[in-house]
Image 1 (cartoon, rainbow, N blue to C red):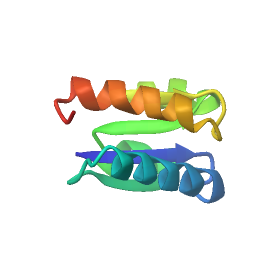
Image 2: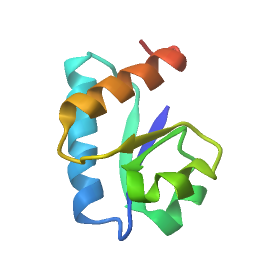
Image 3: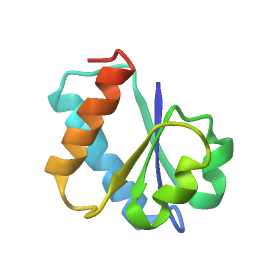
Length: 94
């Protein structure tokens, strides 16, 4: 499974969220999941199974047709953890 964290420019905020996703996966003892970050324009060609982004770009990510974790507050790790758990459970990872 590949999780792609996206933001407008693919730099700071997406990298910060990527680190939070990796931290949560480690806490959940989930292995074999690749996590990366990119800009919105590169998302479609990334080959990811799940996308993570802030709510301002979530609509565009949903057009790709894969599960999207939409964050209202990119610093809210509890919300990220909840949504990540839901997606991983649906995908049979948890």
